Image (cartoon, rainbow, N blue to C red; front, side, top):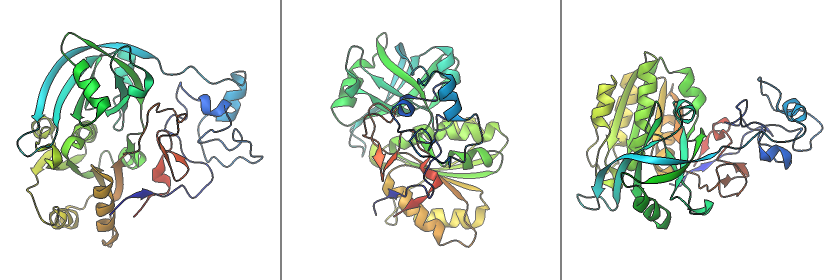
Length: 327
């Protein structure tokens, strides 16, 4: 089952950068704003945005975009190997912690935050988008699975005592994030497999930090390792490790949803997993809301390069959760 993300029902989509210090961005000056129909050349406003008017802000700024996110040279504080390609996993993987300006780490505390990392001196095409696993004062942690040329290059750069080039913060790594904010003090069930366990730690800490109940069902996936269970447990979350199953644990997840009275289901994993869980939710009489990790391709994460385009939406900025999922 291949997942596709339906375009929003309305002309304008919610933009993760709207209202931030980076809005209006270069897309506004190019007539391609994700959120503002007026900046796209329409005569009628249909943005549905309740914050500071993006169009008026653009005019007040002299019809110019706000400053872009800056790249920083981030020293590598530590590195810990997760997998070496053995033990059932196909690829090498590791956790790396880098030092960043405090302002950057403070703006990466939200679930769905990610950064672009690349080796120092390399061009932008080497950017690797990585979900923030943990954000501390002046430091960010990531988990990286080494699979292709860009991650091989970053693997070589991520050694203790060296540095990487980082661009952050970005926030579109979790679609349906508005539902997570709404139910942060409620009951949340998460399913995460393989390297996608990394952002689930951030999400779990967010929910338990707001007094909510958080349970994570974790699987080793193609990585062949479960690596966030201890940290999640320390945050106050409940954790269960999923065994290998012919039905990919769908029956187990179904039973958890039926008996758990959950407000929200979070899927961290492949598009195939997202689609299977959405189909599962459609079989319930009163399903919880759904949030899911974004797997769109991207290089610049600013909507310019076009790598993130999906059904006409710029997936690195647009909240595709407006239109939901379709399989």
